[in-house]
Length: 471
Image 1 (cartoon, rainbow, N blue to C red):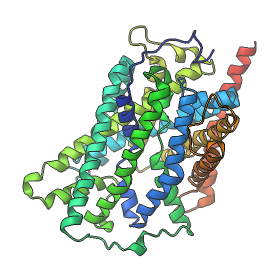
Image 2 (image 1 turned 90 degrees about the vertical axis):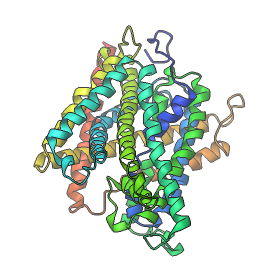
Image 3 (image 1 turned 30 degrees about the horizontal axis):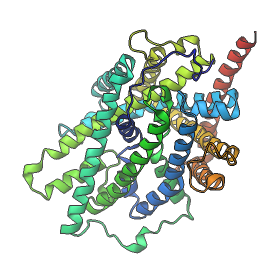
Image 4 (image 1 turned 60 degrees about the vertical axis):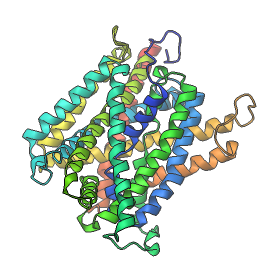
C-alpha cells in the first residue's frame, strides 16, 4: 500500500500558500549562519551568492519540478520510490528521518541559549547550566510534539509564528546595516579585493559547502503533499516566493554584520543579537528593549523550526509505515485530529534521549560521542540530497519528449542536467571534513563508519519488512 492509494488514510488539507511560505522560511532560515559567514570575512558575501546560484536555485527548481509532478505525502521519499523503486525510496526516507532525530537537540539547545539573551543573561554562563537547559528544552519539545499531534491546522500556527519571528529580526538586521552604511564607516575594512574567496584551499571550500547547506530545507514542506490545498500549484509557488526572501536575509544580513560588528568579536551563537544591539545603540538608549525582543523572536523561531521538522519527518515515517517497512502503528491516523500521531509521538523519546545525552554529557567522553553522532547525522543528511538531484535529472530526462507534461525548469532536459549536476556537486563538496580536524583519518573513520552503520540498520529493517511481506 502506498500513500497515493485511494485506500490510504485521509489527512486534513489545512495548509494554504501563506502557510507554506512561512513554513519554508522557518525551516530554512537559521539566522546564526550570518554570524558564521561574517566571521569568515567579506569573501563570505561572494560565497553566499555562489551557493545561491549553484545550490539553492538548483534545490528550489528540483523541488518545484518534482513536487508538481508527484504531489504525494512523503515528499522526497515518495519521489525516490517512484523513480528508483522501494529499496532506494526506503534508504532515502530512512536517512532523512534518522538524521533529524539528532538535529532536534541542536534546535532545542539553540533556543535555550538564545533565550538567555532575553533577560540579559547571555554572558552569565546560564546557557551552560543543565538545571536551566534541560527543563527549557524538554518543555519546548513537549509543546512542539503536542501541537503536532493536535492537528496540522493547529501546529501550522507555531510554524507561521516561527516564520514571522525569524524574518522580522532578519529584516531589522538589514535595515540597521543600511542605516549604518549611510551614516558611518564600517567597523571592519571592506574592499573589493576582499570579496574574492580563495577556493584553492580546503577551509574556503569547506566554508562554501557549509553555508550552501544553510540553504537546505525547501524540500521539507513537500512531505505534506496530502495536507496542502492544491499542492501542484501551491508548493511551487511557495518556493518561488520564499527562496528570494531567504537569500536576501543571508546575503544582506551578513553585510550588516560586517558593517556593525568587529570580526574578532562576532559570536557564532549571538551574532545577530550583537549586531542588532550595536545598531540600536546608534539610535539612542531609548531603544534598549529591541535586542531582547529580537532574542525572544529568535527563540520562538527555533521552536517553530522544531515544529516544522517534526512535522515533515513524521510524514516520511508515516508513509514508510503505510508501505509497511516501519511497524504498522506508524501509519495510524488519530481519529479526531487526523494526524499521524504515532509517527509524531515516537520522535519525542528518541529526541529526548539524545537531548539528555548532549546536556548531561557536557565535558565528558559522552559529549565527544554525541558530537560524532551529530557529524554522522550531517553526513547522512546529504544522502537524500544526492537522491533529490539524481531524481530530478532522471525525471526530466524521461519527460524530455512528453509534450503533454512540459518541464517547469529552464532549458528543458539539458537545463535540468546542468542544474542537477551543480546541486549534486555542491552536495558532494559538503561531505569534505572540517579543515581543523586534528586527526582527519580517525575522524573520517568514526563518522563514515558510524554513518554506514546507521544506513545498514535501515537496510536490515527494510530487508526484514520485505521478507515478512513476501511470506
